[in-house]
Amino acid sequence: MTRAFDKVKNDPNRIIIFDTTLRDGEQSPGCSMNLEEKLKMAVLLDDLGVDVIEAGFPIASPGDFEAVNEIAKVVKNATVAGLCRAKQADIEASGNAIKPAGSKRIHTFISTSPLHMKYKLKMGPNSVIEAVHESVTLARGFTDDVEWSAEDASRTEDDFLCQCVETAINAGATTINIPDTVGYAIPEEYGRQIKMLFERVPNIDKAIISTHCHNDLGLAVANSLAGVENGARQVECTINGIGERAGNAALEEIVMTLRTRHDALPYKTGIDTTKITKTSRTLSTITGFSVQPNKAIVGANAFAHASGIHQDGMLKNNQTYEIMTPESVGLKESKLVLAKHSGRAAFKSKLEELGFDLSEQAFQDAFVRFKALADRKKQIFEDDLIALVEDEVIRENETVRFVSLQVQAGSKGPQIAELCVKVEGEEKCAKVEGNGPVDAIFKAIREIMPHEDARLQLYQVHAVTGGTDAQAEVTVRLEEGGKTVNGQGADADTLVASARAYIHALNKLLTKRESMNPQTAGDMAAP
Ligand code: KIV
Ligand code: ZN
Image (cartoon, protein in one colour):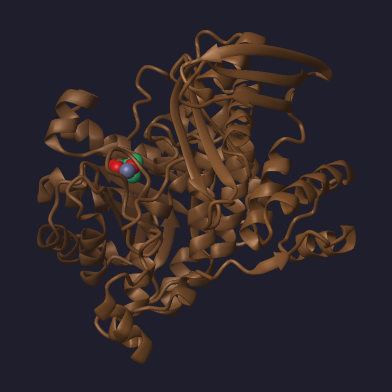
């Protein structure tokens, strides 16, 4: 039997957290990640304690296959799942991609609602039932951990859904997922559907029932919890709730609700909640998808108390206005760590403490930048070091490297950028006028390295710490031929950070190897 099955068997109130950040999340517009970024996220998710990591959709492209395959090699504890349609080539691609994983799952799906069967699949109910049986049977040839999903389940007729679920379990599926694909359900209705399956499907005890709720009406978390209350023991979710359209149920909200309201919802997960903040922040830095300030659990204001009455209450007893502590989600004050006179040894030991292992060259470059930063900024916080070093790390293998920038700006104009970069070791410079300093910088990069087909989709700046001398962290998103890349840059000078971010995105564009598999590109629209 599968690992998830054992966990629930040993504790009937254990909820399996199935994370689909790298699949449903990653396939949504603007959230695409390269291999390195997916691996970084997979390691963080494993560390966070998710039970299953859905690593991607291997048939979608060679890049997707490679990502699932590489994730399967690095994940230590979680089960690694690959998604596939009910098609032989898809299932084989998934089976092959997840092979290196210690614990592997194939997740196969087909639509079951009248609307999807008629217009999308152009298949009748009998053919769908046949496809369910064949796909699960084929998947079982690769692993005994097979999940079957009824796409658009919440708009599927009860009788037909029961028939499909029974067929999938008979063919060997050990997890049955009931997606609210279009985010249409309301909690009472979704809960009823899960309950109905327990009442009517004769072999239901041989599988774990799973929720997969989209957030089109803002009900994804409420629907998932209604599913749990009616017997579901797996919840599919994503970090920061990223995903198709309005997104998926947010992992952090599900987990913290179960923890905070254990009195009413007596279920538990294997998540180390103190790692939630770090995972959330890393994802938004990588994707450039910032979290709205008032977002539950991970928003910048989630633990901020602004009104006088609330602050007064908090000073008297923090339970007056705090239902969970910031520490419980890993939110800490950024610590003051180093100053101008700190030497190489102190810098090295702090980096080790923060978990960085830099090459000699990257360490030397980071130290030079730290000294320059310390000259400008009296107090260097942990977050400053993390931004600076991460900036250095992402630049290690860049073809185009930032060298220097001089900008003329201000109300009188013209705004001029004088930029020098190294392209494969050779220095190239350009002096360009623009509509504002950022425009001038980006034009200068385009003059040195023409890339006419790429469009700027996002330019976003945020301060790493408080204060006017805070470092700026900039994200730039470029789109070319329907593919997007995100670049990041950090510096005490916002314009330098902007140049670094654009150059980072450009390097990603240059090295982008992923290309859609022409065989599947047409019908690969995200499930
Ligand atoms: O939303 C959905 O129906 C899906 C399935 C493939 C699980 O993402
Ligand atoms: Zn989905």
